[in-house]
Image (tube, rainbow, N blue to C red):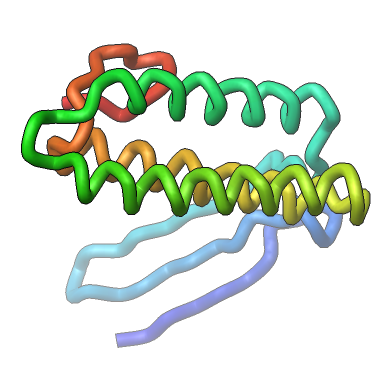
Amino acid sequence: MSLGVGFAEGCDFLSRGLCFARGLGNFYIIVLGCVAMKNEISREKLDRYFDLTTRGLAECRKAVVVGRESDAEEIFDMVSNYLSDAGHFDSEKGDMVLAFAALNYAHGWLDCGVRLGVFEVSDRDLFTVR
């Protein structure tokens, strides 16, 4: 079995696609080409994610499943902490990348609560619902 790795032609370093070829008997998986990567967080995108996560938190606070209040409080604490961190990274440190990362963690906590049945929500624009 062999594994070959090479860079696609004509792409800059940050958006270079990797070419993988792995021999599995007579079966080969090959991925070629340039991958268009965005390596910046815009103000618009950051503001959108602040809005999505804040609205998501408000929705979940109204939708706690009976008997799951303790789980919900733990999630709300984590989401609030990550939202606070995101605000700190953005406004005080000027680091939109870390702010965006914190927002993704915050929203991930909400999505987990939805998937685990802690919150009963149906808004597919805010959550990964079943």
